[in-house]
Image 1 (cartoon, rainbow, N blue to C red):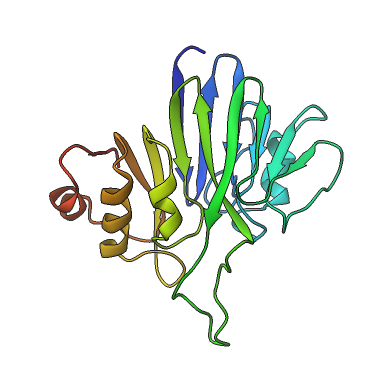
Image 2: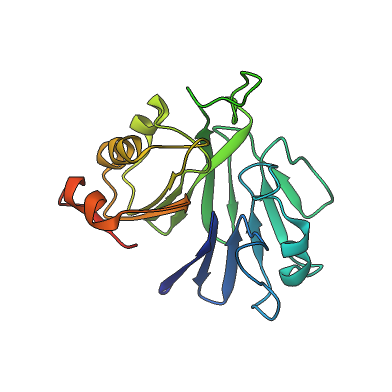
Length: 206
């Protein structure tokens, strides 16, 4: 497929360039201006919260030919949208894209409801001809992470009160054991501390 170029744009927004295709994940206009960026061939959305499903960001990168792969709580907006539930997959331009579980176990809002209930949002595993990329979405460490395939590059969230503590981030990373790792969706980060406690086989790229 050629070289994979990865750019972390801020918050949970990521861009992948592979061949002549450009893929954006959860583009969010409050952390990045998408005006003038290369138009999207595909936009992946993990769930419908405003900082992940941002129509202002879409308006600056989408075209009539842009495809969307989204979670069930986003739903089918038009014919360009493919909706994947947890454990479903599709193939886009030769890239296999699997929706995996992404949810809270303990983190709740003041009303006592989980910020991200099970079965609502997606994480994604993208298989670029054998090079597997895991985008965890808004999640805590969950049992389903044990069932992931061998991951080459992982993106794990690290922010409270919505996703993981530093300790939970490290637990998830050391369970998955990707070759390369990015922390994303964080408010603050202590990179030296995380590197010190990570499995030495994992390269933290932040």
